[in-house]
Length: 349
Image 1 (cartoon, rainbow, N blue to C red):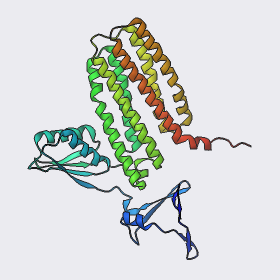
Image 2 (image 1 turned 30 degrees about the vertical axis):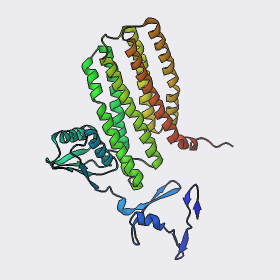
Image 3 (image 1 turned 120 degrees about the horizontal axis):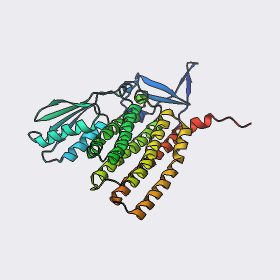
Image 4 (image 1 turned 90 degrees about the vertical axis):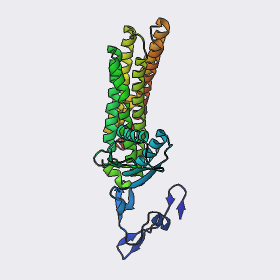
């Protein structure tokens, strides 16, 4: 019997007078390459049971061979490596369809691994082949751990971009731009973990999450935090394009807006880790203040037309966007915690 909304419904059978059994779909058994006598892992998740093959309980050592054309572009090679990394391959052997990998391809692969893939090392290298291995297990760096590192780097980037503006420090601004890769690295690792857990739900506990719904929430939050890093880098880039220091009046207004923007982001991520519905609600309500300050700042720029007004507007836009991404995170927290919030309310008499 099939229910259109819930999938297939199977009846529970009573066997031997005290044992309840339910049959498993043959199509699924064939797909998972399972047969009679196989062990199954059963986990309680609230009012539901999660059923998965016991042989998938531990992280597998998956290996892939990737062939590169001698004329293939670096971007194409990197996209292939990233795709294999994200779907969970632990060992990636890269070879050439020709005689050898050319020097530019080898250097690009090594640079990409260093900058973008957390926990992955080159374990062997020759002119014919490069082998990569991901040494970091899911339990060593959970999804929450990866997100926390992303968040710390992104907020630090925003703060340092503002410091560079205040102190007219071009070297600090360059550092902000360069460190953006660090945010990307941890997001790629987080996505890798979430993909693995969705494919094999028995890994949920190992990556530090409880449900597939929580996986989706953390995936969306990671995108918002990654974009915060991008906008912090954009702030620094716009400063580097300036020919003149920012005037004092503009600087003070930007400091106020940036401080509030940074606070919104920090409190939204903290509400996620704390699973705090009320805290997330407060964060969302602060976004209106950002819009008011942005409007005042734009009016000031129109009336006073200070030097570098165009670049100041672009920096202002990035500050506002960071606050909006913080608000987006808070919205996700509301969605993840609303059930918990409602269950804590007193029942009406």
